[in-house]
Every structure is written in C-alpha cells, then in structure tokens.
Amino acid sequence: MVNAEAETTMYPKTPRNTVQRYRPRVHTPSPEDPFPAILPMLGFMGLYDPQNLTEENINEGANLYLHGYVSSRLMRMGKKASEEGEGSEGEEGLPMTVAASCLDGLVLALTPNNHSYNYRSAILQGYGQVVEDVDEKLWAMEKITNTVLTDRWENTRVPPTKTEMTTTQILRITPHTASAKIRRGPPHDDRHDLKDEELRNRVWTGVVPVHTVYGTPIRGEDCEIREVPQHITNFIDAKNKENKQFAINRAGDEDES
Amino acid sequence: MVNAEAETTMYPKTPRNTVQRYRPRVHTPSPEDPFPAILPMLGFMGLYDPQNLTEENINEGANLYLHGYVSSRLMRMGKKASEEGEGSEGEEGLPMTVAASCLDGLVLALTPNNHSYNYRSAILQGYGQVVEDVDEKLWAMEKITNTVLTDRWENTRVPPTKTEMTTTQILRITPHTASAKIRRGPPHDDRHDLKDEELRNRVWTGVVPVHTVYGTPIRGEDCEIREVPQHITNFIDAKNKENKQFAINRAGDEDES
Image 1: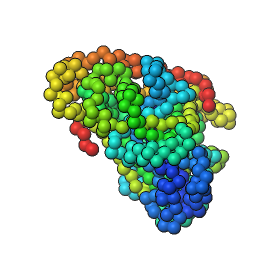
Image 2: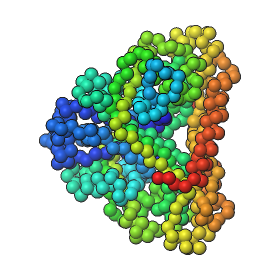
Image 3: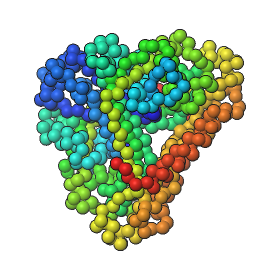
C-alpha cells in the first residue's frame, strides 16, 4: 500500500516525444529541461477482477492505482500516452517511477558514521494509463478512500455524482520493475570503537522507535454529529497500536537487508 | 529541513550524455531506459560560510546538502558531473529533483470526492556536486547528524577517521527552482451536500490530526549506559510536543493555498 508520502516522477516515452524533448537540448540546452518532475500522490496496490471483487488481491499480478485531478499535468500526460499507445502489450502508457518511504526509527551508534535510520522504502517503475472503465474506476475510488481511513467510503455520500466521476481521474500503473530497501535492527559499530571502553561509557547507543500517530478527531464547523463514529475511533485505536508495536519490533530485530 | 522521507531523482545532463543516453531510444527503445531513478536520502538546507559558522543560515542563499555512500550510483554520477563541469556559473553538476513531504492530517468530508490530506510538500530542483572541501564536508556531516537528533554529533566519537571521511560523501545541491504545496484546515464540502440535512446527520466531518512520534529509546546490546542521556530525552519530549501541537493547529486553520 502506498501512503500519502508516495512521490511520483515521470516523463513521456514515445520516440516522437523523446526527440522533441531531448534533441533540442543537444544544440540549445535549456535550464528548464533537465529536471524530472515529482508529484506527491495517493494510491494503493490491487488487482481489478470483476469476477472476484470481495477478495484482496495484492499479489504478483497487482497494479498500482494513483489518484489525481483531471487538470494536473500528470493526468494529461498519462491520458496522452494512453491514447498514443505505441508500446508493446503491458508497456503502453506513461513511464513513471513511484517511491514510497516510511521511517521506523533513529539508529544511534558510537560514531556519526554508523548512525542510520530504520526505514522501509519501495520503488516501482511502470507504465501509467488513465482508467476509462467506469466499474474499475469506481472500484479504485472506493479502495483509495478506504486507504485513507478504513470503511470510510460506505460512511459517506456515495455513489459519486456524474460531475465527480468526470473531474476525478485514476491512473493505473502496470509494474515493469519493483524493488524495496529496508533497514531494521540495532546499530552496528566498528570493532575498534567497540573496544574503546571510555567511548562506550560515554556514548549511549540504541534505537529510538518512530511511528505515525492519529490524534483526537477535530469536528468540522459544518458537522452536526457530536460523537465521533466508531469506524473512525476503531481505525485510530487499531492503527496507533499497530504502528507503535511495529516500530518497536523493527528496533529489536536483526537487519535482514 | 529535509527529513528521512526526502526522495531524490536525477539523470545526467551534459549534451554528450544526453545523446548517448536518449538518442539510441529513438531507434531501439529499451525498456530499461525511460524511468527516472529515485533514491531516499537524508539532508538539510544551509549556507556554508566559514566566517560565520555559528549562525543558522536558512535563507535564499542556502544550498541543500545530501548524505550518501561513495559507492552509490548517485554519488558516482554527481562526481562525474562535477568533474565535467560544462554548465554556466552555479549550474554545473548533476540536475536533480528533490522532494520531501509530511502528513499533517486526514481531512474527512461528506463525500469521498472532498476527502483530502493536510500535508506539506516541497520540491527543489538544482545542480548537485560532490563536496570536496574538507571543512565544508565536516560542517555538513555535523549538520546532517544533528538533523537526525539534536546535539547528537557532540555526544559521539568525533572527529571522523580518515577512512570515514573517504567513504562518506556529501552532495551539495545549488537550487535552480523550488516550490511548496501545502494543504491545511477543515474539510470543504459542496453546497448541495451541505443543504442535505439527512446526509449531515449521518456523516461525521472534520480532521484527524496526524503526527510523528518518537518512542521510548531501546538500548543496544553493546551499550554500557543504563540511563538514556538528556540530549536524547530532551529531543524526544520537545519534538513529540511540537509535532502534536503542529498537527492540531493545521487542522484548525484555514487553507492558505
């Protein structure tokens, strides 16, 4: 699952675009040209299977679904790439790299050099296409809403209006490659520092676990309901407990990378 | 200040590289080629001024300093670009986009369409060069360590050994452009939904503040010190209080974007 801190980079891939975009730089390098674009987005991993919508399908066949606005540059580029569709099967669309990372702890060692973070970082590269199928789009919208907060979709005004369906766009990314980088466990110091008793009696080493906390809900001005509903309190209680324990576990386990 | 979740993308910029890297795709598109590379990194913003090292200089003249390993692809590319140095003043080096984002709250509205996150997201584009000056490098290493945990540098074994200075590399990014995207405040619903009394009596709206918590330190196996030192407990207490209040403030304020 990709959280709010996922970052997306992309640029057009067709040979025509490549020439238009890069060849001029050979002769007249432009300061605007060389930088990749990055956007923070929301998303989730899932396999859309109209025959089997109840089951969670986060497996090898899963795609990444991202949520954005129709006017955004990314969606326009994705739409354009989908329409051009010059790639081979499964490789049509806009080439994108999506990254998501999560901090699990501060790793404090005897030397600055051996300081580190416990973290999880995932990178996915794939081809993005705008979801045109209405059923798949609705399915993805529900999943994305419930990624923000479990069971939220069914506790709001649904289905979306025609206007909402038009202005909201979903990008489906078919994975090309994916990788993860994880650091867990206690600090690892160099042997010569560990032999230094004066140093070990002076410098504290270990892990400060880090996790995300969902705080007390703050009612909106327009809200008529005084009591926070159970689907919200349940989510907050469960996530806070789970996140805290996860960060502690990460501090104690051995490095697996 | 850039936190652990900063993501960096880059590719080489010189005309020579551009041709080598992209022109072949016109004829023989390779599936490996089109994706930008992304790396999670650590860093901070600062202005290195040997005459005035005590003062914090996070202003228009500040650069971004990133920490990485000498063997990483990024550092090798940065080093190469520094050596080639074909750009104009201040625009030499490897073109990079750096993104950092931070989640401040879940924004829960009457409809899925108006759900959102409170967040802060910053994007910086600039030219990266490996820091060769030893004093500047030491200064940046100290700043980066103290970005992880305040006053940590002076509470460890310093200065770094010759080997540590060689294996650690710092990349200095001279900003070309920078931008920020921020969302704060309560949910905003559409007028026709706000007029629907049945809906307003059924759906809770408001903000769930979200913040990062530093937990109880877990002592490493090799640690001889039983009591957690004050520079660590002070940091944890201050940050937890500050983060919590910040997320609450973000929920209550009006959107400024």
